[in-house]
Length: 195
Image (cartoon, rainbow, N blue to C red; front, side, top):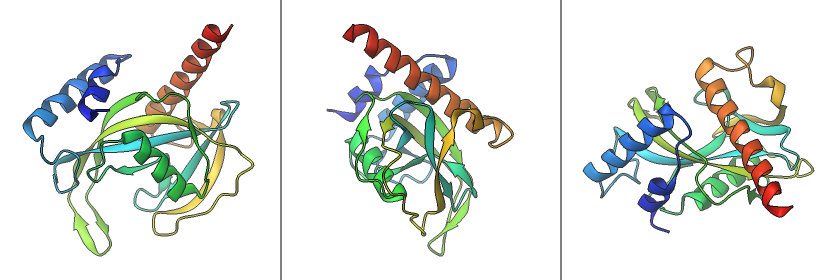
């Protein structure tokens, strides 16, 4: 599927998503040749997987080396316009889990996320924006977790009551609660259609 159409087809649920979708589409129009590449140093598309267990009452998080906090999985699309494939590939690499199912194949969240300047592989990366598309991925708690030491220092399942400002900053709480609520909404509506 055409990556622009995936973003156009996304239905925003609030003012933040309406505005971020507009800005992302405007930016794609201005930089059509390198929006999928990190060589666009000011802003580029990333794809993330918000990993939940089958009962949707836990979330799998990684302890991110650069951010030094617990975070979801994901990464740069590096020219690949199959955003769901990228989200699953990154989730596999960062957690060690081999099998994921997408709760839906549609983008579930669009966000513009700031990245502060940092060192990566002995090179300074200037502050920039991630034009983030996200998917909800389902995984089994039975699978073996493996730390990807060059990117994270731990992998762990979190109960939903951990997604508060006691454990995360307010911007992460907003993002993760939005994704949790979206997952529950999707599951509820899928079940209505199946009845």
